[in-house]
Structures are given as structure tokens and as C-alpha cells.
Length: 411
Ligand code: AMP
Image 1 (cartoon, rainbow, N blue to C red):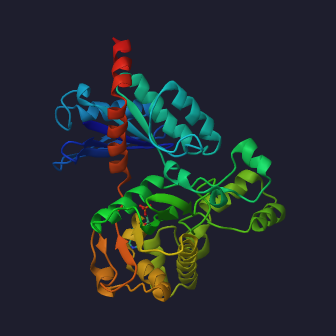
Image 2 (tube, rainbow, N blue to C red):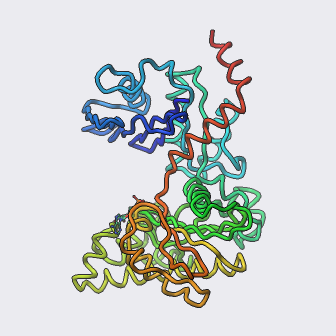
């Protein structure tokens, strides 16, 4: 099957075109600065051909028309015609309590996703724009939604509830949902493939450490807890997000600084975290460099960052009554030798032994603990797009009759 995976953000669309039969990515690219001056489309084909088009891309519909035009272009394309496209898989950030897995997009599904927009006002509306545009341009190509929150729907109620009046949960759906679900799912599954073992019986902690960061506790392949909550601000210290915070701090700031709710939201989402503490950057490489040059606030940011991860891993070991595998992924998890070393050194008490040489030398995926370590520590580059393509294919195959009927209706 040829499947187009779309990740539609507020001013960008990232895409990958998969050939699931050949297990190959035929092309990948990005539309950037939608609705802003200097919009562009960059496409990389798997044979090394790259092209950048600059033009006016006023909205998501125009952006997607550009992408589709390029995918079938004689010079830079990967398909002969758009009829070769079997399905489109959309990343959708918030599926609320409605969706615990991928679904074929129907009018009802769209209504449900629209209803979840209140919970993710920055993310669901642009995700929906990608869906509307695709429906308009290619109405007879089946589309599938894959939700960031779905994997964490297996959390037990005592893990996902906030200790606020229960009526507020019932009224607004205020609870912990978790994010990065596709990544946590992928790396936990991949870890078991590498270990040549069934996921059943495993207690795995996955650390997705990128610009945004979350940790998940995964038992028998099911998420039982994760660090992000109602929104992606809970949990880890991130590039610009504070992570866990005494709510009293926020009400104090609102009171003393005389700012409103929106400004307070911006403060904890855009000006906090690694950037807020270090004053250097939200980019971990720059903060590590500054710390090495003696910048004390950069070092403090690193110490806080690592300490928070250690505390969460420790709490998830307790929550699952053990752990057999810890996986690092995301830009920092995959690349930062220092982060993996600093985090792992606090788990000697459970027999975790990091192989320092493997930690320093590993490229790509693999095991970085010693042969006698009681906990396997692994690095696995995440691949959310591959999961979206695979899940899209499964959903389309499972709904073959429905898809055929829809196509007939278009004739
Ligand atoms: P992501 O959001 O997954 O793309 O991750 C972005 C983060 O990964 C940024 O903070 C980068 O500084 C960080 N990162 C990338 N490469 C390295 C590296 N070699 N060492 C430390 N951090 C890195």
C-alpha cells in the first residue's frame, strides 16, 4: 500500500509517503510558514533528490495541494498518479476518552475530534485542517486518525484522575490523558523485538526525551502511567515547559505580576523549563555546552532535568513493582550520553549497570547496559510516522467493505 502520513501543525505540515509492501519511505518533507510570508515546501525523495519550492501557501488546503502536486511531478515525484495513493494517516493529538486506538475517519469521527478541541486548542484544530483539506481534495481516499493520547487510555482510574472535585471530571473531562503515545508504543514494542521476546510479562519504562518530554510505565504492552496529563505541560522539565509545578506558584505569580490566565499559560509553556532556568537556550546541546564552559545556571538546569527523570523512573518502578527494561528515545534520549549516564547512575540499587563504552559509542538502536545488568537499558530512535502508516494500513484493511461502499457513492 502507498500511504501518506500527515502531521498538520498550526503553520506547518510534515509528511512522509510510505510504501508498506516494500517497507520503504518513498519521500518525506515539510510545508513551512503556512499563512506567513516566505512559505515553502521541501521534499526529499528516497533516491537523494531534494527540492525546495518557495511560494505563497495561504492555508493548509493549498499546502496539501502543493504536496500532492509534487508527489506526482515528473521530475521530483514518487507516484505516477494520485490514484496510486491507498490511504492517508493523520496524526491527531487529542482523542479524549473517545478514542483508544486508530479509527477510519467518518463524519462522526470528525465531530468527536472537533469536540476534543477544547482539551487541545493548539493542536486539534490544525490537525483537523489537514483532514478537512484531504477530504476536499481526495474524497474517495480513505483517511485514518491516529491519536497521541490513545495508547495511554489503558491507564487505571487511580493513575489518571486528579484529586479535584469529581464533578469537574464529569463536567469537562478534566483528567490525565498523556501524550507521545505513538512513540511510547513504538519503542516499547521495538525493544521486545530487539530482545526477541514477547511484550507480555515485560515491565518497561520508556523515556521520550525531546523538546517535549514524557515518561511512560508499560506493563504487558499497556501504558499504566505516564508523566504528561490533561495537557503536555505536566511531568518532565522540558525545553520551554516547566513540567510539574506547585499550583500555588502559578496563583502567586498571577497575583504578584498582575498577569492573566493566557500570560500565565505562556509563561509555563514557552518561557520555563531548560530555557527559563539556564537563560541560555531551550536546546539541550547548547545548555550542555554552556555548562561545560562553567555556566552555573546551565549546570543547574541539567541537574534539575536529570533529577526529575530519576524521580519519575523511581516512582514508576514502585508503581509496577519492578522494571526489566528502560528505553531512551527522542532527540535527547537518543543522543545525550550525559543524560543517560546521569539518570542511570541512580539505579544501582536495582542491579542496573550501564556499559559506559556502549553508552558513548552506540549509534542508532541497541542495548547500552552490561551483560550482567538486571535491567536492560536501550536506546531506540522513535519512528511515529512508521506506526501511523502501519496502523493506517490495518484500519483500511479492516474496513475494506465500508471503504468500497464510500468509493461507490462517489461514482
Ligand atoms: P526532538 O524534539 O526529539 O527533536 O529533540 C530535540 C532536542 O534534542 C533538543 O533539545 C536538542 O538539543 C537535543 N539533542 C539533539 N542532539 C543532541 C545531542 N547530541 N546531545 C544532547 N542533546 C541533543
